[in-house]
Length: 178
Image (tube, rainbow, N blue to C red):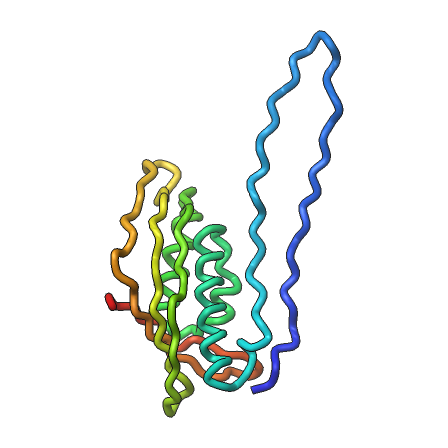
């Protein structure tokens, strides 16, 4: 597999403030800026056609999944996923629908605890133990905020992937209780 030669660019947001208000006017409150999120940058190792490269790619894929859930931006997740990956599509569709409906996802994150890989005929299967933290979310603008229950045990993910041109592409994304 050739090394991926593209780099992800992050937008820089500059905030400028005004200095004071006339003495007879009350200053207007300013909103606190929330931190900006940039898509995760793919590590160099994740581009290697090797077991270590496949494992690094899965760690990166989980980072991209976290980014998509927190921002609603699924473009990178979709680029890294095969169109035939039903598990991938399920997460993308859920995130897109949540944000399209005016909802959001906060605080949830998946953290990879352990990975191992196995070569298979179609490419590589990577098995990952993942801890999923609790989240607060709103399914739509009209719904009330809810809290998810964190997983008491790790999830076991099976990620089947293949080299697709100059990068890995996820073919299957299956989760089950460990």
